[in-house]
Image 1 (tube, rainbow, N blue to C red):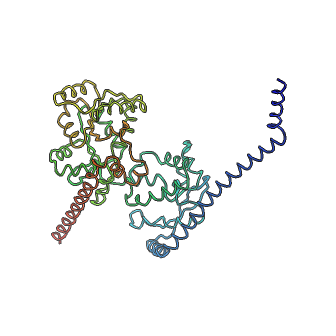
Image 2: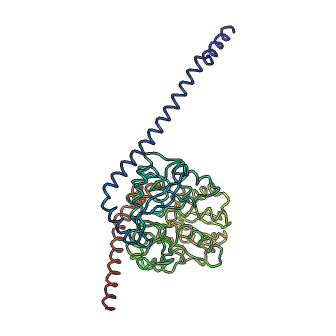
Image 3: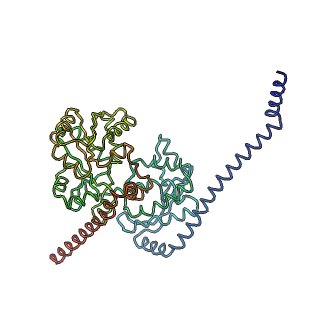
Length: 461
């Protein structure tokens, strides 16, 4: 016992002697100093990269600067500035060329902001520089953007250009600040290059348009959810179809399916291919409304409104796994029932009766295109649901059977390549051959439109 007590006293002396305390303080000081040096070195390196890149870009584009300045001057403008908030909400003036919103040169109006990068007001990558009038009074997340310098390119800008800005700008800014890193910024910069080809994101466009003789309800994802909610609360059954490049190809060789799309109550554009086709044909698509992104948002809306949902389709066990996912993430959503899609023809009447007796207002059918859309069209009045939606392979994603592409691939518009890698035997023909055929049809339609315009011009002259 005395030996143990002596050992304890010696240990306490080692731990709490003046020498030990000084040694721990020195170690803590050096750890803090090391982290401070690392953080400040990284910040200085980022600032150095911004400065050098801004110098190179200004030098390279100086002839364009001179031409744009002269053009702005001849139009009564020049170089103007807008009051913005930078790091720690300090005010600065962001430079820009004064062009009217209708001018085609408005796309180059932000070039003088490179001078702001030189001055250190902004970075190339960061949250959008907002005006003082945009400061919200209560939302804490919105103030996170002021923890770092604003940028010319931001995560929200990329998602908006890719038609994936389903979350608010505030939430995306907070996500960027929380995960900010040099490699993360490099990834955003690389993803910004293809985003330039996507157009202006959600744009002013007609509510309805026709793409390769298929009618499209031109709306955003949030508008689509509102429309589904309104139809589900009604008294007349309605059919919703998603249309992507593969659907268009199928419609060209399947007249019955094409007729169903033309008669459907609700058809939305799904996929980057349809959106790019819209740009080529001067039929601007407001947003990529695909079922996989719509599903969780729709579940949230149905949970709040009290609407019932029925799931039909997929392999045995898949619909059950989707139901399990819904119960975990949206426990208050009323799930009226679920069933796999592998039933025999003589079981069909029982399946329809079960759906009708469930009282579900929204039915999702995952049989694949065009089988699901034909089945819904044939039994729409018997199912009892107010909104019947063909969702393709959606159940496979939310059951966990097939993982979805990472967000960065979706931002690049490369989700299709991820699907090919997952199921090459089934998907290579659809995407490599199918996309080429789709592009050919779009270009041929564009040429046809040009010929019609020329004919009209000759006739009027």
